[in-house]
Structures are given as structure tokens and as C-alpha cells.
Length: 90
Image (cartoon, rainbow, N blue to C red; front, side, top):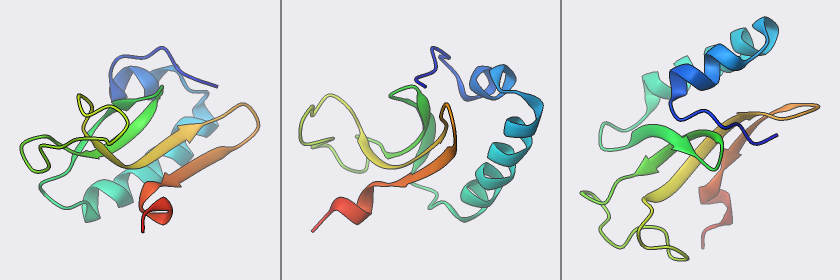
């Protein structure tokens, strides 16, 4: 389910308590290990982790206006998911 939240804090606040705890635990591990050049943001209705334009000016190849999405964390209707975009890279 795509969230309409505009910030990560809002996204987390809108989750049911059990989902909030699980997503927050995974988020904490990600933030602890995320490269300092990457940024956390909302992307496609999920918590996104991106390579910003200041690091990778070309951005996302399908829409260069967007930063390069590296990973995303989401609470979907029937499951929670960690999307790793680098898996799709060459």
C-alpha cells in the first residue's frame, strides 16, 4: 500500500504499533550502516534511501530529476519489505 506521508516521521506515525516496531528496528540497522553520502527520504510512498544529486548528478535513469534510489523499506498490505535496488543493477 502506497503511503501518502510526506516525511519518514509521518510514515512511521501512521503505521500500526506492531508494524511501527518492526519497521523502526530495520530502519535503525539501515541508518547505522548507511554510507554518510546517502540520504533517507520518502520515495514512491515508502521510506527510501537514495544517492543524492550532489553525489550522483545523473540521478535515476528513468527520471534524472529524482535521486538514485538505493533501497526502500515499506509496510505493504500483507507484509513488510526491504527493497534492494542494487540487486537489479548490472
